Image 1: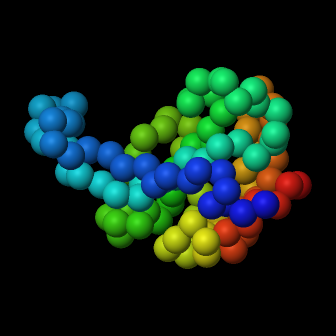
Image 2 (image 1 turned 180 degrees about the vertical axis):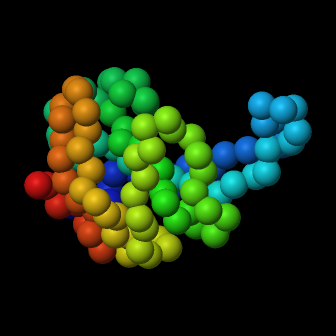
Image 3 (image 1 turned 60 degrees about the vertical axis):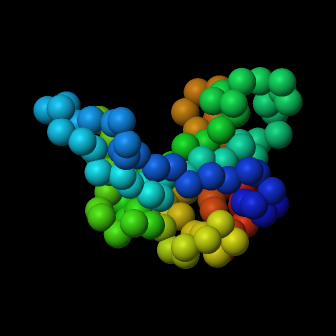
Length: 113
């Protein structure tokens, strides 16, 4: 299965109207992560957007500004490739709870573990 078939989207942060905790404007960020529909095949088509998507934060975002510190758990993936068609992520992805899908994104392909 191809990643592009799972409605992938780059995740951004900051920008107009967004402030840091100290009240200063948050720098706009692009490609700090990505999201895509879960490839497990068990989510109902009418489920809410957030419940059937996998969200990945990148150690090396597209914008080159270093990782976006958005999680206390510290889970980040290393990206190789700049498009969804060429993207490889390491390590593997394991959804916690729910469907529990486990797999890889390799050269734009979804590979189940």
